[in-house]
Length: 369
Ligand code: OSB
Ligand code: MG
Image 1 (cartoon, rainbow, N blue to C red):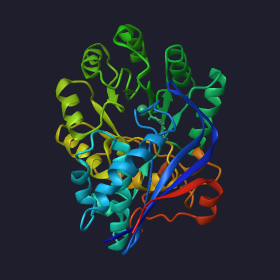
Image 2: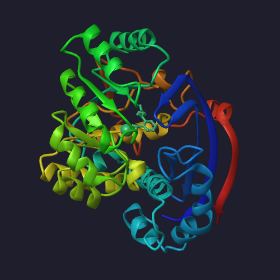
Image 3: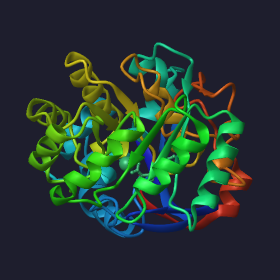
């Protein structure tokens, strides 16, 4: 495969409702896509980060810079670029997993398309539908939260995740549990908003039968999570802390988590994501696929990953309508609480040119042969 063109497409899609977390409030997904054109096929990927370094240290303008100056030249210098060789070619560059993930993913998509191979089959999928959860942002009032959760449950989502932060934790969790009963599969995500000094407070969440509490402490604080795990009955899941399969192995060995949220962008792509899946499976640790409010482009690829056997918990992969009035691909729809894993070549979805045009802010070539 020869690379002819690498193009960056900056997009901005308004969210159907604002999404508030302990990191801030988003009213739109403002990110960029990478389109790689090869002599055999075209491939797409979606940057997982935001305009600012608030969830991850990476951010869109920084990722563009590092792609242009340091990553793209290393890939285009390869004699025969293939997804399996990208990570090694990029290894002299420290960090920047989200930027690296883009290149590997777009090339993997193109490669799979060139071989008429679905990404899901390439990764080792064992199912054609995956259970869909929904991540519910912080709202102004408890009444707003109950309305929102009730709407999602009517649509058929099989699991609810509540974003929490100090001042918005026990009360919303208690209210949702009380309103919807013990049968509701419920969990919370703190996005690093607490410290170990809050351990006694967080312990009060044990009363509400949460499946897990996601990333209560700082991303660097594996030891803190291991200490917290000793006092919480609720299983700890790590999101931000897990940037590689080695991180996952370390966290498991330290007792810092009993569940792992796998986000392909955060860990440098789908190949490392699959290694995390494998490490966790070997330790009996359940995993699920996290999300970054992806458009249909990133979501299709996440669905392929979530079809692997160790993804035994519902994922943060919701229908298009939960995020956007108009998606960049054919909309994903909920079917009995699940989303279908695309089975066409590559990610199995096509980018709709008119929708893409409507949501494009700017376009620039990062490489042209
Ligand atoms: O922590 O899981 C998170 C979105 C942006 C940044 C961080 C997170 C999230 C979500 C959204 O929870 C999940 C989704 O894409 O549906
Ligand atoms: Mg999270």
